[in-house]
Length: 130
Image 1 (cartoon, rainbow, N blue to C red):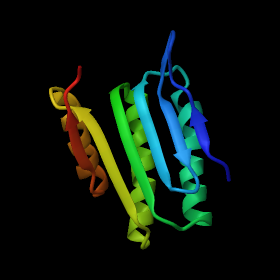
Image 2: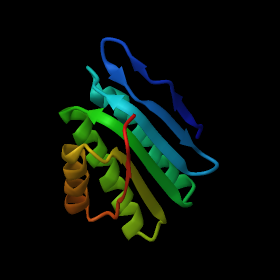
Image 3: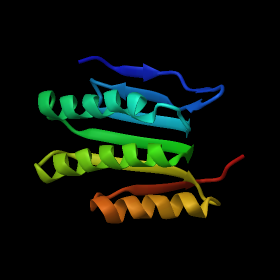
Image 4: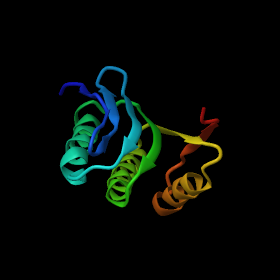
């Protein structure tokens, strides 16, 4: 296994920055996610999380700092959160911190929906957008 590092961009489509660190178990997704081939982008991230769980069996911290994501991204995030919940239920240590603009009520509601849908504890961390 190797780290996954993807530099985000805001060209025709918005690609989030990704930093999945093998040795620390810290996984970050930051920026905006509006992609043409969302599944092609997120599938390797899902596979990495599954491989980490299978091979490393160590604590995993998932940090999300998305200011915008489209519907197809939402489904992929739900899939990742379900993987994390399964790991937690199997005895794995999981922390999910979701940073969001405190004025973005829709984002906060989306996060609360993820909590309800997965049963996973997600720490909501509000910030003020500059």
